[in-house]
Length: 193
Image (cartoon, rainbow, N blue to C red; front, side):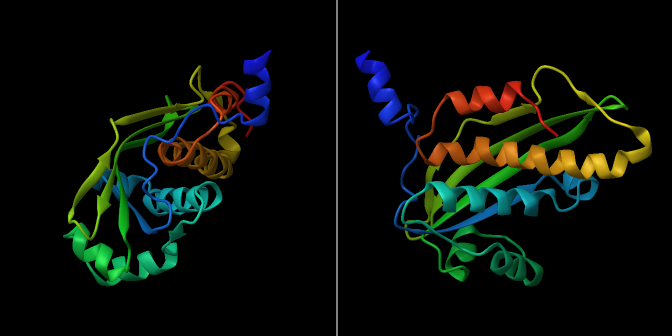
């Protein structure tokens, strides 16, 4: 009973794996594999924006660099050095998402998102990686694909893509704040389009 009472008062039973983003200015950047950038154009930008929103909601005293500011800089410069990028964004920390795999389809008539990503936190002042996550593998929905109507494929794909990016952003950002472990079960089990 005591454990249940404590859980009701604070259901966030999973601690942040890295809590160094508090009280700092953070830039989130997603670097897709070259083939992904062409096949799923804009997925990297959408993912970075979704992670930014999630961190703003969940991490206290965090200041995230605006996604538009990062996009403007990216349009004019190549990302060669994280230290240079961090200084240009006046950021204390850069969260880097290296997206090596991103797919929306299982076969020809089913949606099932799969993604692989490596996440690291780069400390701009110290010019080194402060934290890195084991490669993250996300499958959504995990049990099986979701059939779609071929007549409305493009509309259905856009809706599914937004949902999958939200799920992927949630999985990535959970490294940086405490959360309720039951949320993962809800997301995985009950797919809603």
